[in-house]
Image (tube, rainbow, N blue to C red; front, side, top):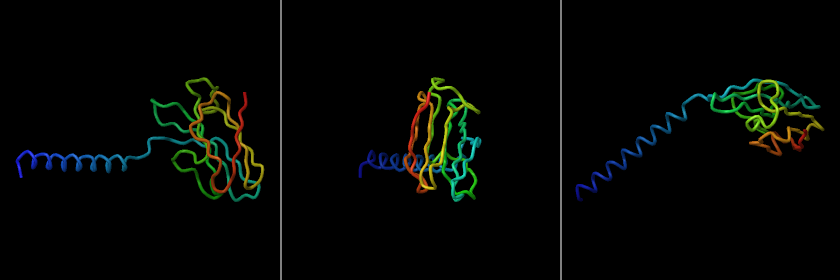
Length: 141
């Protein structure tokens, strides 16, 4: 085998090793976001709850308002909302409580809810179902 082929194979293996090490290092880093719970709404039957919270991930990102539907006995983890996430889109929508846009939540039944957000909020995530709950969305001014 030619010397240049051995060198190329060696460099390729070294490159893959470095990529693997960087990937492992990054996956072990703590989540830099911080959640602040604002409001909790228990479901009518008491089995679930909706938690509206602000998420701050540092100086280079805007505050976001997020919503998770969780079992009533669980606490809010340090992760993004499982149903909704929005920011003010560089102040196009007015800030609420801790800096993200206002969000309104209402249970219709144990399996149905309505979530409202400001018309100018930049919606990043709007899932229609979490934990077996169907969520309908609307906007307000």
